[in-house]
Image 1 (cartoon, rainbow, N blue to C red):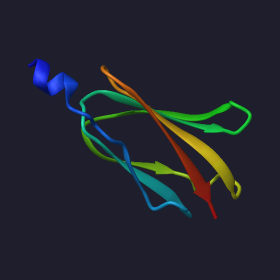
Image 2: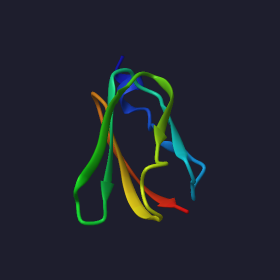
Image 3: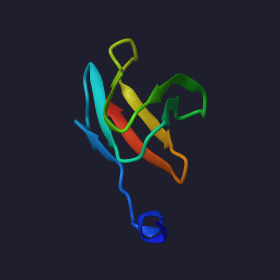
Image 4: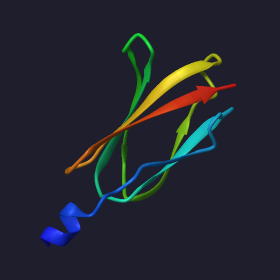
Length: 83
């Protein structure tokens, strides 16, 4: 319905800062989750379904990263800090 499409949807990311993994709650189906460094290089990409998605960050050095979630209706960005 139109009311569903206009409903604001937020990306919930936790924990932040993270250590071995970061999780996000995806409210729409069939999403794509990407992790970028601050130079814009794509480091990881995964398909995700509606609900809780966990992205492994254990192999990344400490630093600041950008988590990008693409859904059918929206694109979300979040800054992630890896300890």
